[in-house]
Image (tube, rainbow, N blue to C red; front, top):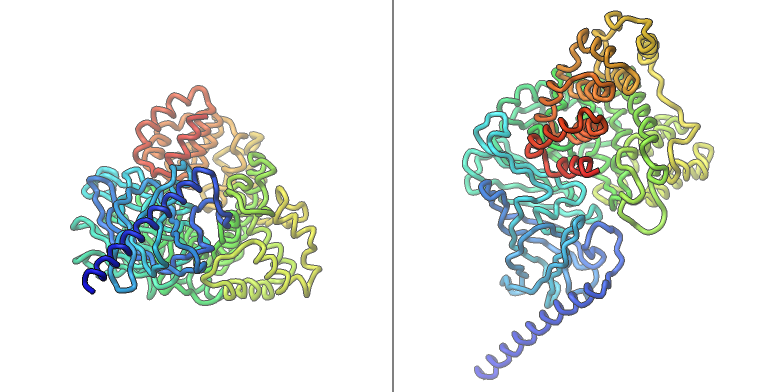
Amino acid sequence: MLFCSALQTNIEKITMQIKKTLSAFVLSALMSLGVTVAHADPLSYARYDQVRTSDLYLDLKADFGRKTLSGYAELTLNWIDKTSRTLVLDTKELTISRVQVLNPDGRWTSTSYMLDKFDLQKGRALRIALPFQPQKVRVYYRTAPSAAALQWMAPAQTMSGKRPFMFSQSQDINARSWAPVQDTPAVRFTYSARIDAPTGLRVLMSADNDPAATGKGGWKFKMAQPIPSYLLAIAIGEIDVRQLGPRSAVYAEPARIEAAASELADTEKMIEAAESLYGPYRWERYDMIVLPPSFPYGGMENPRLTFLTPTMIAGDKSLVDLIAHELAHSWSGNLVTNASWKYMWLNEGFTTYVTTRIVEKIYGAEIAEMNLQVEQEEALASLATIPAAKQALATRGPDVDPSAYSDGSLIYPKGAWFLRTLEQRAGRETFDAFLRGWFDSHAFKSATTDEFVDYLKKNLLDAHPEYMAQVELDEWLYGAGIPANAVRAASPRLAALDEQRNSWLRGELPTADLNGKGWIALEWMHFLNDIDGKATAAQLRDLDQNFGLAKSGNNEIAFRFYLASVKAGYDVREPLNKFLMSVGRQKFVVPLYTALLKQPAQAAWARSVYAKARDHYHPVTQASVDKQFKK
C-alpha cells in the first residue's frame, strides 16, 4: 500500500506538471498566432469575463536606493467561468520571481506562468496557468526604477532637502507598473497592505490612514470599499499632518503643512454641501495630501486620500474649486465609475458639473457663474485645436482606445455643459433628485454610456420628452463641438471686465486705470485668457509693472501671464525659468514648452531649461513634454 500510494502521488505530480507545461505552451501558441478573445476594455489584457479580483493584499518593501518596491501581491478571486484555468493580469516592467496558488488543504504551491511580448502602451500580460480554480493567487515581484506610476525623489528635490520622497499616479493604466492587477476600471476590489519603509518616513495609501501610526512592524492599511485599480495610491516621505474637521485631515511636507491646512480650512463645509445635494459621503474620511511640485496633475481623487498639487495653494483660497472637483469624484468616478476609459466623460463631465454646484453652495452664485463662464470659454477656445472627430463625449460600437476618438480635456466642460442643459430644462429640484438617484442606484459599480442613457430615458426623458429630443441627445453625446442652442453662462462682473479689456487692447485705457487690484483670481484668468495672442509685448510689460504678474503667487495667473508673454515676445525668462524648474504640473509646463518651441528665439533656451528640469518632473509629465520636443 505504501509503494502504491507513493507511486500514485508521483504520477499525480507528473500529470500536473504536464498540464502546466501544456497550458503555458497553448497560451504561447495562441499569442504567437494573434488569437485573442474579445473583452470590453482594450487597454487591459485581463479576462474579467472569466474571473475577477475581489480583494488585493500587498506586502511590499520600499527601497529608495534601488528605487523599487518588492514583495508580493495576493489576489482573492471570484471565478465566473467555471471552465477557465487561466488568470491573466496586467503588468508593466515588473520582474516576476514566482507565482503561487492556495491549495484546498491550505498549502501554497508554485504554478507556471508566462509573460507576453512587451507593448509600449499596455505592458505585458502575465498569464498564469492553473491546475484548478484557486481562491487565492500570490505573485512575487519587483518594480522597475522606471515604473510609469512612481516618482522617486532625491532629498534635494524635497522642501527640507533631508529625506527622499516617493509617490504614485496610477490613472489611467499605470497601476500595473507597481502591482500585478486586472488594471481596468471595470473591476473593483477591496484591498489591504503592509508596507516597509525606511525609518523616519511616513507611508500613506488610498485607504484608512491612522495619524497616530508609527510604522513599527510595517505600515498597515485597509480599504473596505471596493475600488478600481487606478485608485490604488501610495506616498512615502517626510510627512506631517493637521486635522481639518471631524472626518478630514491634510498631510504635507513639514515646511508646507501650515499653509496647506489654512488653504483647505473649508473642506468640511464642502463635504456637507456635496452631501446636501447628492447623498451621504460613503468613504468615511476625506483626507488629502499636498505632494511635491512635480505631481503631474492638479489633483487625483484617490479615495480617502486625495492627492493635490501645491500649485493650488494661493494663500487666499482662490483656487479651492480644485478641492471641490476632487471631492465631487467621491460620487462621480469613485462611487460610480466609468467601465472603461471610453466612458471617461461619466467620471469627468459629471464631476465638473458637481464641482460648480459645490462652489455655488459654499461661495455663492456670483463666483460659481464666473467660474462656469471661464470654463465654458476655455472649452469653446479649445475646439480650434481639437480635430472634429475627437470632440465627441462618447462613441458607438465596440470599445476602442479612447485616444483614438476623444480629447480628454474637452469631456470635462462639455459633459458638464450637457448635464447643466438637462438641469435647465427639467428644473434644479427635479434634476438633483435624478442625479442623486443615478449615484445611489449605481453605487460601487462601473457604468457605460448606454447604461446612463437608459437611466436618463427611464427616469427623466420618457415622461418628459420635451426636455431633450433624441436628435439633440445624440448631438451632445456623439457630435462634434458644443450644440448651437447651448445656453452660455454670462457673469455681469466679467461683462464689465470685458469692456475694460477691449478698451485697453485698443490703447484707449491706460494700464494703470484697469481695476486689476480689485479683481479676484477668476477675473484675472478670464482677462489673461482673452488677451493671449492679442496683447503686445509693451502692453504685457505695463501689466507686469503695474500688477506684478510675473511674480504672482497664484500659479493659475502666473501661468497664463507667462503663456501670453512668450507669444507676444515679452521677456519673462527669469521668472519663467524658476517656474519651470519648480512646477511639474502638466497643465502648466506642456503648453509653456510648446509655446517656447514655436518661437525661434526661444527654442534653444527652452531646450536648455528642460535639460535641467526634466529630472524634477514625474514620468507622466516627462513623456508629455518629450513628445513636444520630438515634434
